Image 1 (cartoon, rainbow, N blue to C red):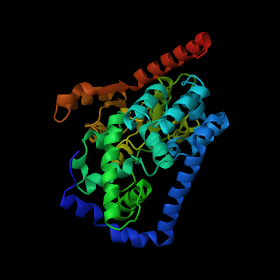
Image 2: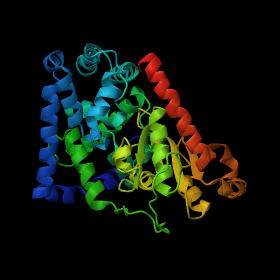
Image 3: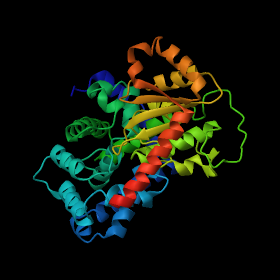
Image 4: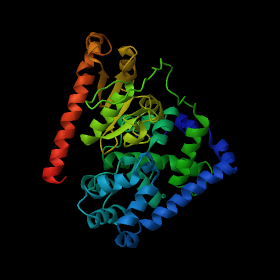
Length: 394
């Protein structure tokens, strides 16, 4: 970690007077009130005694109160299938929660690592939110706000580049982020925010994020919108529209154990809105706003349980295949693989583009799947997992 320079201090505090004024109006007051109520809720629900008395219903309530949980379309399904079932039993989860929050004999990094090793299903945004709101005087919240605001204020040199590009990998990275954020918290105290804790810091970062940084357009980029003709579904599975291909990639990703997202939530296929087929209703905060802005327009993304993107998928139904490659390339600095899904007649164009810059040097990361291959893969997976569930009860 580097020392904060005078120039960085000036940059960090440049909006402080505006923030203090904003905090005196209804919007700012409500923002702070929401944060303080969030703190009181989790401090009470995750006290040592409350954890000891916790049953499954209370555990579900705690998870569903997390702001980080709002990315899920069906929170009850997630708690049941990704938190309770994979983690032995509730008593084990409770023992790990007690150790994480109340074992002061172990350093933060060790407690964080042991919890992540032993408990599946809680990503870094959720885990740091819990730590932050139980102990706002000790721990920071690490999500898309600091990942976006710190680089925008030229403070990203204080931390390794990877913590801005990816989810926190381990307790050592979180402890380092916490150390830097604590330095910024102390800058607020020096500047006149008396007894500022990490909630004060988070609210200040939120003010900069929402009120002072340039707003990115949320709509999809200009492109030729295909006219979808809805045809009766035949008994034999077939991809007839852009939305059909997205539907089968979402279903396939779920079968393979990935967490799925689509940007085309309102589009329909197989009598279902794609937003209801996808497991996520919004993106996990795995990066800063610039990269999140690109990711929001990818047709389908498969995530792992730590909310890191693993596969980015673009469907090319009517437009030029170069459009898909251009969109995928924007996320080329992440540890992801890319799929282009299209009709077989577009394969030769895909292979031609793979021989050109900038794809040539990383062509092993790019893959082409034809509609027929996708259907075959889906049908094979569906048969396999149904048989597996029947035989092994999983």
